[in-house]
Length: 364
Ligand code: XIL
Image (tube, rainbow, N blue to C red; front, side, top):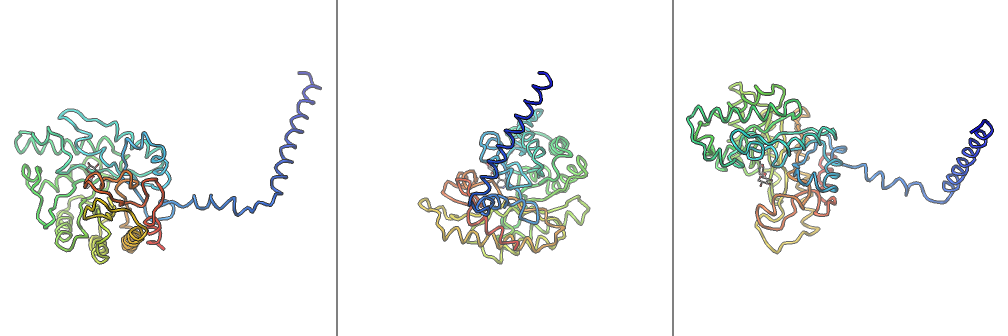
């Protein structure tokens, strides 16, 4: 291309650009109300993570995260804290004595890092989700202790610096307030609980360590037992930072019990994580039940009560609220209890329910 050809080529570009600009101007001069154009964008800006004054999380199913784009996008948009629904449990990461399988848990952690989300680890010690090799393990007390310690320290060590907090011990207390006679208590005695926290702390001194349980809202018996256990650990100098209130609750639970669950736990001064919230609409397993607007409004009201009570505790104690699963389509409740139910703020089509607004209203 010689100099003249270059000039003519350049002027053609300038000319066609001005045509584009003219058509812009023409478009702009039409009578479309700009409010209409920006309105949908504004609605889209609302999300739990943006609108709530503390972290909002969900328990995530790794296979859905991998395979379902709508699920993945909803998680990216709404939440800033993630818990693995199952991928970090004993049976998932440690299926045989000398084998650790990290792939699903690593996938979740990598996803969280890539999308700027916090990861809460669940759970280092539980009486459920144990592989056969643990349930069948024949060993001395020292060998059981070694099994407990090795598992905790390998898992915490693997995720050190990436997982900021752990449910160290899960569900160690029965509904009547006694200590659950789990395989761990049978083999190691109740003091294993404190040692589990010490082992986790040795493996990652920066991780925040939680005792996690359900039933704080059942009434004073169970919550007092949980709080006695936790304060006992704290007073002994065990490294415990927080209480996980699972809050697998039901729409019929009283406001007084829901509120007391949160305020009494907060009175310990520890961090409080509402760690697994969902709200059954069909606790009596009525097989013919359907979701109605009325039920949805009742659910919204109870979510609001819980969020209001949580918002009232000191900021420094608000670790966040995590819902157990993402939508009514992937909630563990219908399959676990073999019944129709709608426990979450998103419906089975991934749309926001009244409960979503109830959560937002809780911090107004
Ligand atoms: C549940 C999962 O959601 C199910 O997929 C699994 O089959 C059983 O465990 N309390 C807890 C969670 O601490 O780990 C449980 O998760 C729900 C009750």
